[in-house]
Each structure stands twice: as structure tokens, then as C-alpha cells.
Amino acid sequence: MSKSDHISMSVIRRLPRYYRFLSELYEQKIDRISSTKLAQIMNITASQVRQDLNCFGGFGHQGYGYSVSQLKDEIKNILGLNNDYKAILIGSGNLGKAVAMHMNFEKLGFELIACFDSNEEKVGTKLNNISVKHENELEEFCRQNRVDTAFLCIPRVCVENMLDKLYSLGIKNYWNFSHYDINARYSDAVVENVHLSDNLMTLCYRINNSNQTNI
Image (tube, rainbow, N blue to C red):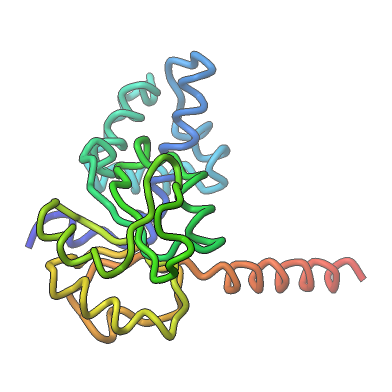
């Protein structure tokens, strides 16, 4: 078991926020930052900042704080943003189109190399300079190209059959926009689920709670 196996998901999920804020500080030409100041930006405690970063080696210096550029690069390496993972997108409807057109994959560790759809009318159209292929071409494409992950932008009812096909082709990493529980079917799959409705309901709760507090 590696050291990373002991790191909690709550810490891991904070890493992109560290990276985003540090990138903004770097662009502002700020050379160093204390754990206290970084904690204020992150809206957590200084102790939490130190605990989080100590999971990966620390990186700070007593009386100096953290080098913004060094810490940004360290977190970039921890996140694996230089790995250039090859990705395919399944489903080029409104959601898939938005994902393909507006995500800066190159800066996020991925390269989108193909898009697929079952709708004949979408085949041949372009998303971010990538021609949409028919799903019938998926197997041949995956056998001829290295594919590390799939972005699933298809309805839940369509996922199971597509998932079985992708898994059989050796693709076990998924960015899942459907509400299908991939891990219930394939426990060894690496999955990040995106539930926009859950996120919006959480916002609704927070607004509702805030309104009640102010009554």
C-alpha cells in the first residue's frame, strides 16, 4: 500500500482549489505566502493547510512560508496535470458540446482525442476541431489508439451498454455526467461523478437556510 492510499478524499478534493488559488497568486507575481494567508484564501484554518500539505511532504520553510511558484508546481505534479491522459467523449448533445467546447483540457491533465455519438445527424460535425464519429467506430478507434478515460455525457438509460463496451476495451476511468452508478457495476473503475442537480439542490438548501436565519 502506497502513502497516497492513506490520504483522505477530503484532502485530495482540496488540491485543485490550492492549485487554482496559487496559480492566481503566481499571475499576480506574489513570491511567497504564509499558511495563515493561504488559509484565509482557502477559507480553512492554517493548521488544516499545514496538515494537508504535510500529507505530500510539507514544502514550507519556518519563518518564510511557502514559495508560491514551487508549491504551485508541486501540487501540479501531485495532481498529475502533466500526464496528458488521452480522453474520448461519449455523447455530443448540448451537454457534451459544452464540455468539449469550453473545458481547457490541456491545462487539466487531459487531451480530448475523439467524440462519439449515436445520432447520425451529429456524425461529421465538429466539436473543438474534432469531428464527431459514430459510436459504431468506437471499438476500432480504441484498438488503434491509447485511450485512458471516457467522458460520459449521455443519458443514464444509455450508460450501461456503453459502459460494458468501454470496460471491455480496457477503459476504466470515467468522468461521469450521468446518474448511473458505475462503481456498483465495476468496483475497480476510477470515477468522478458530476451531479449538477445535486449541486443546485445544495445551493437551494443553503439559500433556504440563509433566509430562515435572517428571519
